[in-house]
Amino acid sequence: MERRKALGLIAGGAAATAASLTALPAFGAESGRVAGATGQGKPTGQGGYTFVLDRNVKRTPVRFNNRFGIEVAADLYVPKNARGKLPALAVSGPFGAVKEQSSGLYANEFARRGYVALAFDPSFTGESGGTVRDVGSPEIYTEDFSAAVDFLGLQKIVDRERIGAQAICGLSGMALTAAAADSRIKAVATASMYDMSRSISRGHEDYYTREQRQEVVDYVSRQRWTDAERGTFARGSHEVPFDENGNVAPSHRVLPETLPADADPITKSFFDYYRTERGYHPRSINSTTAWTATTPMSFFAFRQMTNLGMVAPRKALLVAGADAHSLYYSQDVQKMAPDSIGLVVVPGADHVDLYDRKDLIPFDTLDAFFTKNLA
Image 1 (cartoon, one colour):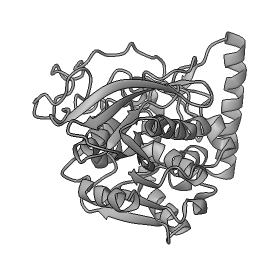
Image 2 (cartoon, rainbow, N blue to C red):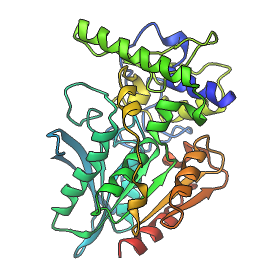
Image 3 (spheres, one colour):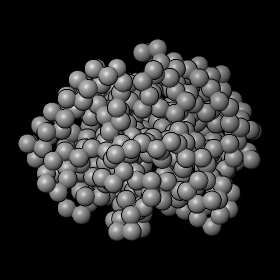
Image 4 (tube, one colour):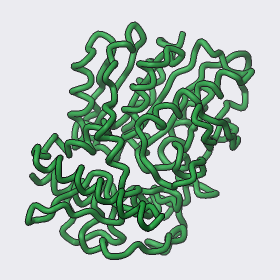
């Protein structure tokens, strides 16, 4: 029950913050230090990036459209000494993050190792298009990976027969789903994987009862009427928590503005990334606000990874922390297709550690996986 309460706080932003949605804080507003600094106050990035661009990597802002006509914003990372046709990776995640955060860090590292890497903001988030902001959509986010493959395959420097996907946290389920339907994705790896359809429609560790699932559906359905009547799109919890009396208790923030003194370890780890200079970004939903309140509807309607077996004979690799509250997602997915999906469990790592802890992220293992499977 401890973890369920923690995930309820993360999803709901704590009941104390439910009454109001504050303005976006400026960089560094939480601590008085500049954003992009580590816990020791050392600057690690410029221009809103939460990491330092490798001196041997060139980063270029790019734009491309997905098949729904939505413009996707991305950063293309290319080795400065690139020669010939290179393997390439489409990179995105976590759910509610932007390309200046974890996905950019991964893309930067892969480019340093000789890949062309494209870190993108999913549709409706960050700098990507979509009229209604901060909508979560399993279908469109899955499409964004295939659109990223379109873009990469049109680059002269890319070998279009050697394109893979790397996803973090909540975009991992979309990357695996995309790979099952798009055989141009030759290999896919995930870090701290979440199945967002399962998470949102069933709760952490599937704790929602049948009655609670119906209550969430009813809450979202009522919210549709409210939005339609007002002509607006309210904010609310994507994984809807319940209060002590068993009532739906949505909030207007993913994370609280300030960390409660009695915060549990899971909340602390998410807060330490998104709400401090370590990972804060003003366009990140998790750093500043919440998703549209009706976001859960599409995740109840559409399951991810239904056709996961069709990834074979191509390969997937799931990386998860041994201490991560999300480890069971990777374990369960690996069991669905053990012949084509591998699992690496990182000792001493929690869920958020694999966002940016380069001393814990097994980049050598990921590199070896892609080198073999994009050959």
